Image (tube, rainbow, N blue to C red; front, top):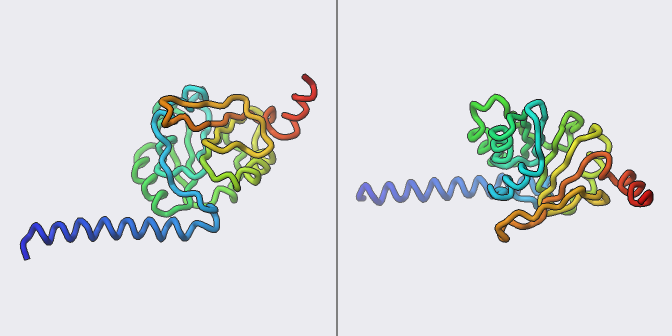
Length: 197
């Protein structure tokens, strides 16, 4: 067998094995993620988000389902924040660990963010499926400290009132990003604010 055929077989075999691991990794998490897959957030969307969410170096950013950690890396590079990512998909977790290696300001944690107290976060970012947003809104209302901000890609927090909705350009990156501030945006406070005006 010629060497080039052997090399091609190894390359395609490796790619197939990685893809199979990804499918198994994602499929095993479906009961927890309810179908949410690792989908990278585009750099224009992250730039728009970071433009709108000004942060200080003493702020702590939590990314719920951090994927490959790109939001964490860009926030640390721009603002010097402390960044914590939570990821339950083993393949995405390994990708995040590899890409954030050597960055002391970033901590990647393998596990389910539902089991974590989010009270230390100054900013929470998420890109989750709609059927998780009501439960997440209740968790955030219980745990966040006043002044904490939340950014949600594509899907709003059920019952919360955004302080701003971003539509980044170009249009292909223009799906909404909902920005909230706690407690002003949370269900009880948002309703009281609307009644007072």
